[in-house]
Amino acid sequence: MSTSCWKIRNAIFWVSTDDGLALIDDRTFAIRSFRRAEGLPITGYWVGSGAATFKGEMLFGGIGGLTVVQPTGSHTGPSNPDWP
Image (cartoon, rainbow, N blue to C red; front, side):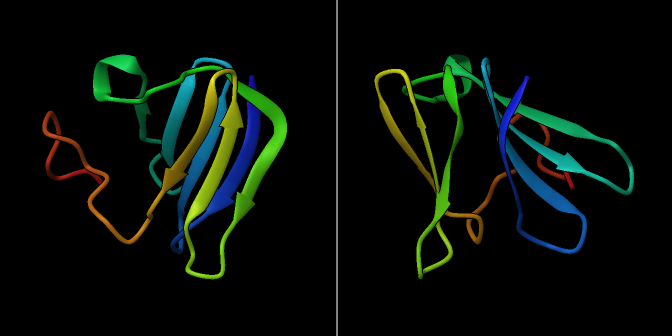
C-alpha cells in the first residue's frame, strides 16, 4: 500500500509504503525498493505522512521516526548502479 508519493524528476517518484520506500520510473515501470536491508532505519510509514522541505528534501514519517530523503543525491544503490 502506498502512503505518500513525491515526484522528483520528469518520470521519477519516491513512494513510501507500509513496507519501506521505493523509487518508481513511470516511463519504464522500473521499481527500486528500499527496506531495512538497504539501510532504512524504519520501514512502516503512515498514510499521508509525507512532506517536503524548502531545500527539496522529502520527509516520510512512520513507526519509530522520520526518514529524510535527499533526492539530488545518488539513489541507485550498489546493486544497480545504472538505474534509472
